[in-house]
Length: 77
Image 1 (cartoon, rainbow, N blue to C red):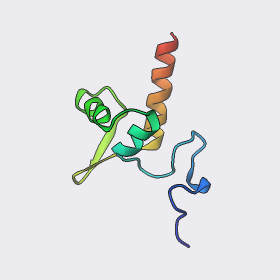
Image 2: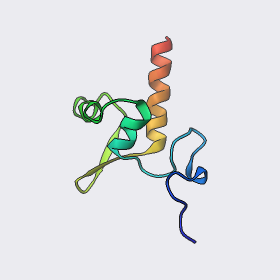
Image 3: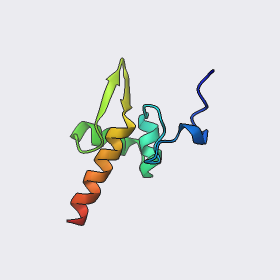
Image 4: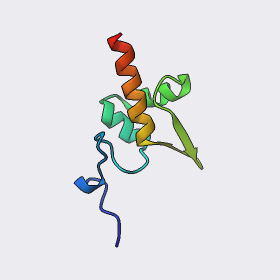
């Protein structure tokens, strides 16, 4: 049986993130920011933690969720 397509509701985690590694384009779309902002976050190490797969950058949805939760808690304090 093949995996459902990325936009299929069965591929969504409880946190509302896809059940696959995210691309920089996904991060930009998720937060409604330009792609260049995502690259700046990575250069400055201020955004969600990413990792390289060859020449490609990917983001673990769980790490993105943790980063968002921590950031939200910090802003609320």
